[in-house]
Length: 104
Image (cartoon, rainbow, N blue to C red; front, side, top):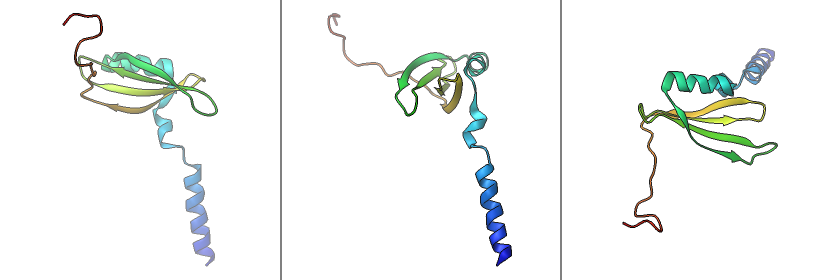
């Protein structure tokens, strides 16, 4: 009985002390941006503020028209950014039809 209790406490204690999986993909924003530009030729495509508690975060999409790669960053007020998604075959959606005031 004591052996099982000790084993369970050890396993749950170790898992509680493990660093989060996303911590490996977080770094100061400047360093991540330099790496995206140098390694993947990505540039900032779009960004916006996310109203989250207890502070706002900035969501950024970096992409490369040449390679088709993209990366989604979440940047915190502290200057730390985390990569939350990345992939290939990025494309921009354009509106179909003509814009108002532009002859077709």
